[in-house]
Length: 130
Image (cartoon, rainbow, N blue to C red; front, side):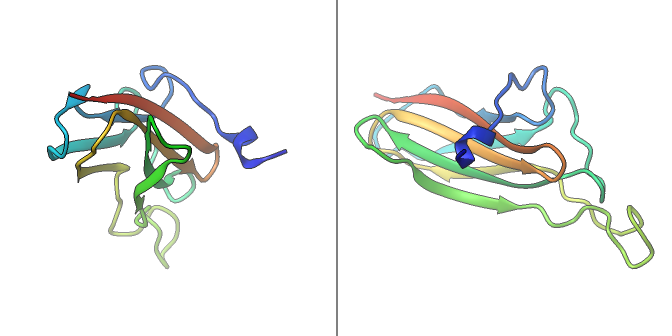
């Protein structure tokens, strides 16, 4: 077995663990654009001490390349934990981020996320450079 055997995928409209990658379908060479990553856009994901998204990583795989490049990794640390007990803390973070990106060629944006109960999830969106 390999780590890839454990990656799960699904349509984000029917699965609360699947990352939603939102950005333009096409961009100009070296033109800055925003990529939005959200978990639980259609079906909210719990964000509790017991059940939460720990991180999302974003990668870009250019058409001409063999390997993807890591764009960024985003950790979510606040899940209501406290010395008073589970879900008694003053802070909750939501698994939503935006990042500005520039690319030189067409390829695919890929997001991988980790739920502390339901494991690894992967999503992909193709993007074209005009």
